[in-house]
Length: 140
Image 1 (cartoon, rainbow, N blue to C red):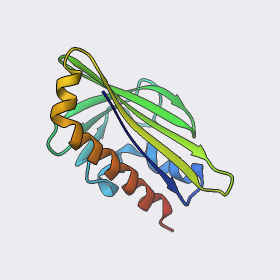
Image 2: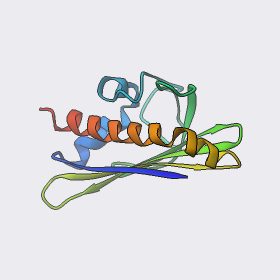
Image 3: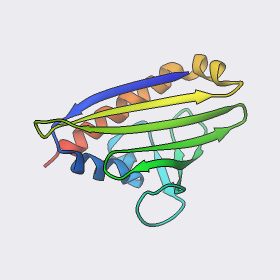
Image 4: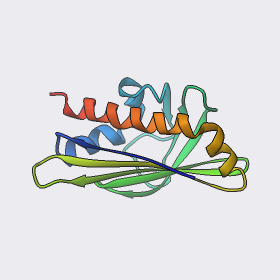
């Protein structure tokens, strides 16, 4: 199951990236996350972990699996029967704006069932994240 959301932000990719990778501050700008605790200090990097608490979902530990500085990061969380990947991609636009593409991809024997039960919620959370990131990155 795959769920996606995108947006264009009136800020350069450097600004958007700075907001995006400061995951501990996500609860300040998206209602889809109520608490984040990093497993390590320092910049977000491959192997870094974060414990996320989200309304209506079980708390989960996310581990960064891919990261291209200033451009994209992917992290994954495992639960019995399903592996969830969260993808965050920034595309700089010629006019100084940034296109952001977010996705949740689920695989495993329970992915279909989880998608049916939680698909609407996951779509709403992606939209909240996209809208919140826009508002935070565009703030002066």
